[in-house]
Each structure stands twice: as structure tokens, then as C-alpha cells.
Image (cartoon, rainbow, N blue to C red; front, side, top):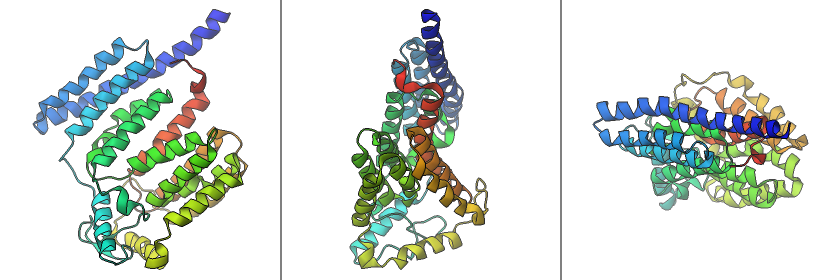
Length: 337
């Protein structure tokens, strides 16, 4: 009975890494073929060496997952120069305006797509994305390494090979960094709640959607941890005392006016405010997975019921949500790598 009890979790563990390898084999092959044939980048086919390497290493799931990470990075590099999204470009334009002594909020930018869209992010975004899309490639890579460390194999399979997750990395999208900081902050909550709260505050100073997890932080880690997030957020958002709080609200209004409705958006903004009672449920969360998933639910309801929801939002919420689901469903924290 003891041998059977030990064998079943191991088979489940290997089954999940096999599923990740299969995902990469199917989706990665399609992307590599397209990049080689239609974009003249045959070297992208080197990414497919990750498949036999991962199969060879499958008895050591962490090593097999590492092979998938390398293959995914090669795919992401192959998309350099293909496609453009404006988030980082708008942040850099906002930085230039701030350095000239003007508020970056409440105005439209020529660098935006569509032209005239505003800077709607937190003040820290004016510094964070100065290096350009390279910082998001680093963040995406570290996110995959984090998923390996958490043994979230199914989530890794998706993050390493889902076409939009791979493609957006080098286009100027800006949700990989918040996704990394959010995941690390939430993972720190059980052992280092104040440090985790500080990272959540930093995340919210890049993109305010991280405040969706504030009630869950308070419920799981206590009011002191919540006070750390609120206090540090006040410091990080303090430039609004100079620029005026109204500017960021004008940016949000301008975003709604300029951006067309997205195909993947549910476009039911009146229901977005259901996110408030959902987030409030986090105040009674006592289990880590529950705290994470309640915040994720509030995030999804508030953002994806809007008319201009972006696929990029999944880059932020997907990794930590996947970790929480796999922990809950498969007890990965107790499995041996």
C-alpha cells in the first residue's frame, strides 16, 4: 500500500510535465515553422531541440521544464522586430513629458496606438520601462523560472508555448514585469508578509490592477501587511501631489474614449463593479490559495468586463493563478522535484 501511495502522486507529477512537453511540441512547432518559413528566421527551429531534451529528462521534471524554458526564450527572441504594441512607448513618452516639468497624465500621445491614447499607468512606470522591451523579456524568462521552482508544470506549458504569451514578449507589451512582481509578492505572503506586501505596492505603482489583491493580503497576512502595502503605495504615488490626482482620472476617461472595443472583451462595464464584493471576500481568506484566487477573480471581473480589455492582462494574472490552482489541485508544494 505504501508503494502504491507513493507511485500515484509520481505518475500524476510526470503526467503534468508530459502535458507541458506536449503543449510545447504542438504550439512551439507551429510558431517555429511560421517564423522559419514566413519570416525568414530558420534558426528558430533550434527551439524545437527543447522537445527531445525535455523527453529525455522527463524523469527529472525540473530539468525537463528547464529545457522548455530555453526553447521558449529562443522563440521569444525570434519575434524581435515582429509586431508592435504601444504600452512601453507611451510610458517612455510620459517620462519625457515628466522630465520637462509637465504631468504625464491627462494628455494623448502620438506614440500611442490609436494615436492620442494617454499614459494610464502608475508613476513607477515612468522609470521601470526606460530600458524598453528587453526588461519584459527578462521578466518573462524569470516568470518561467519561477514556475519551474513552484513545479507548476501545466502553467509553465501554457506560458512557454501559448502563441500570444510568446509573441507579445518583445513587442512593447508591459504586463510581464507586473506579473513577475505580483507572483513573487504573493508567494512571499506566508513567510515574509511585509516583504510580499511591499512588492505588491511596487506592482500597483506600475499597474494599479495589483490593488485587487489588497483585501486578500489583509485577510491572509493581517492588517499590518495591508498597512505596509497602503503606506508604501502612498509614497510611490506621491508624485500625484505635484501633478494632481485628477490627471490620472482624465487619462482613464481618455482611454475609454480613444480605445475601440476589443474582440476579447465582454464589454459589460456595468457589471465590473461586482469585483468589489468579490475582492472583499478576501478579507476572510485564511488559506493562501483562496486569497490568491479571490484576488484573481476580482482582477478578471473588473478588467475583462470592460470594453477595451487586453489579452495582455492574462500575462499578469495567469502565472500566479496557475500556481495557486496547481497547488490546490495537485499539492505541488509536497512533491519532490
